[in-house]
Length: 396
Ligand code: PMP
Image (cartoon, rainbow, N blue to C red; front, side):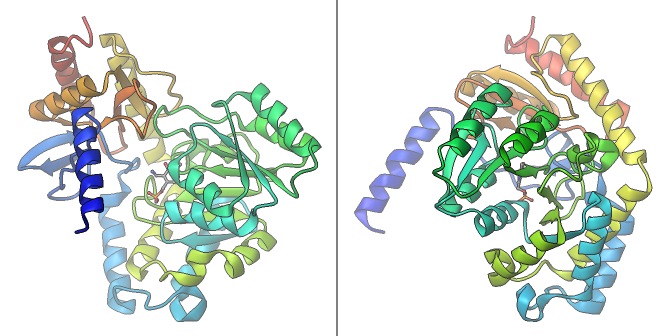
């Protein structure tokens, strides 16, 4: 290794470790369900995005196995050569039905969906108004496009309006986009989409909503855009297939001409191998389950409300969450990591989340209750939270 690289790595890794910002990764030794096995301990899992418990659903596992038997384990090529299987076409039709749009396009991950979609439409002559707390993949997608990035204060509609006015009236840009998460993943709050749409109409902004944490969760499972009845107003509806859907992948839902354009211009669609057949078959069936029944959705919200009420009653700061995402905001990074470590020792897996994922000084343990948790598991988790919270002086 070159000395320059070695010095760079040593200095920076040591600095992160000293500041309590180095993230240790624990391999999970089995399924990522309501309970997980880590370092030989079975723990109540409050860290996965498997909102509806579909990642371990037996019917979906069987559907994936059957598709592997028929099609093999890989798609074999990029979508535009011969990697488009009939399964991909069915999936995209199912997603369009789910989202209430003319068409959809799927990608290999939610992350690369944002890299793909933003840069296929925006360029250096454009501007993007981006919520300050948008997900890293949105930020990177914006950067890749080379458009001017204009951040607005988190969910601050006056700031957005002022910046939209300035950007459009300046005459400097060909197109201006407003881009936001549908549900903010670290705090669980919901974007103010009706106000965003109003501002977008006034200034002819392109609207882009990444509903990674909303699909399957808000709008009776159909997502945040549906929750507000704005399916006709949002140009780009982004979703992941890795969270409530339980598998992997991402998609854009929108008008047919937008999807046609992404099929010829978005680089991960053109240059990266298509989603594997077993995954695609399982995803299509998972989406159908969400369309057919709200049972899992209802259970998720019941569990989310129960955990939130319990943590709040114990005196934890659970922030402003409007969804099942339940942060316990602790503040100091080292204390946050110690808290998470003690939860682990007592039987709860709830990972600490610190800078740079959240701003400095707002370290938190983020809890993700799912439809697969039982009341007993949540009660046990709350009892552990109480014990550890008192021991570390986070609650009285
Ligand atoms: N967008 C948002 C808002 C997210 O929270 C995430 C997941 N952390 C992603 C995109 C990336 O999705 P995926 O994990 O499917 O790549």
